Length: 623
Image (cartoon, rainbow, N blue to C red; front, side, top):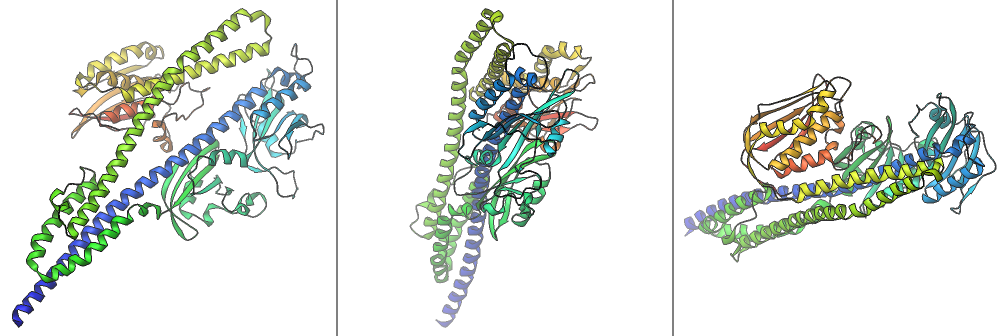
């Protein structure tokens, strides 16, 4: 009996050790994999909030630029600066009225001013402490202010955007002061002589608050300049210290962000330490000028990533102790009823973590013991993950359908606006003064831009919603047909398009035509002074065909090679290159739906190479 007991004890001990190791490894594997999945989702959600805030900030700054350009081109502005403009009346009074009207459209406008070429204010509109706008009679000399000198040297047609600082006169120490960003454009004569400067002071806190409205509730929001100095911080005493002789920077709080803030990257996502606690951090840069910008950062506690996973972790811990006790009683029971089901759970958990298939352990889930309880907990986790993925897919489809319907329904009222503007211009051409004609031209130009934007958005929606129709496509013939449409324009610039050899594969021909057309059009649009040289080629890479559309154009800086594929993303103003920022995002959408990938590489001799893969075997991917 003693020997039996000794053997049983040894078997029980061995089983307990084996069970402990097995359960520990399984639990750690599932925990680490699941925790990584939850953390990735938190990072993606956090990045969406900062992206939306950055886009909103960029849109507001773009609006301010359009406003100052509009005011600088007014006849009243030029008349007050000494140019002879017929029918200007009292330009000072008229200009003050226009400044007031423009200021009322934007509560964040603190001042709107016109300075002559010596820095003397000619017209000045101020917003008082009560929020009301009024014309100021006490005009000042601003010739000594740094922004006057900087704006005076801006080339014709360009706008000066200042750093954000406290709006204080030289040597003034009064606090609190109002942080502002100055948008200014010089007014020049036909000969290029400086006549004066139009300046809009934007209240920076209101501008930042407009962007912060889109940030995630309960998260920590930070805003910095290009040197890492705080413009917005939960502790308001730390903001604008750089303008008061005491700096408070991101280096003091989140060293992980320092390099990004002072670099040229567009976005940052990763872990960080803030006030001795671990956070998930997402940051996005918004450029003000070539070497100046604003960085928006949002932080959420790292514990948020584990909050949804805690019940599964706790259930696993509750299962371990009973199973270890059972293993100590009988080696056979452990081997037959525990080891085999655990192997099934391991395989099923691996499938869930890798994303190959849903959790599948039907026999194990029917067990009434702790292993069955663990299987049901894992199954519940898998179901919840699948449900969230289904919700995301449904949301994406609904958003695509909404964009299609909205852009389609906007066509009719936009056509009506265009028609009436054209009718107004033709019928009253001889009765309108120069300003009215210019305003109509602005409206026509805006409606044309809106039509192009709606058309591109409608095209993007069709690309997203139209079911793919796979068939055998000779890519050589297809690419040559697309290139023939652009051939005349390319030859007009002294260039050429070289194609092939390209394979025959299964794909949607309509979508492939759009893809090649957009990439060739992109190469022609962003050409240099040299004759455009476009080469289309393909090479087999395992199960995929890798295509390349190479050009000798202006090229793309490394920091922007991912950004260009995002919808509405533009690297140049519309006055430099026309477009809506949807073309390359449509290319990515087409490639994604075919199960491939698209990216851009630099060409050593200059230019860009847009590369994308298409699987050799046809398949449509739901995204």
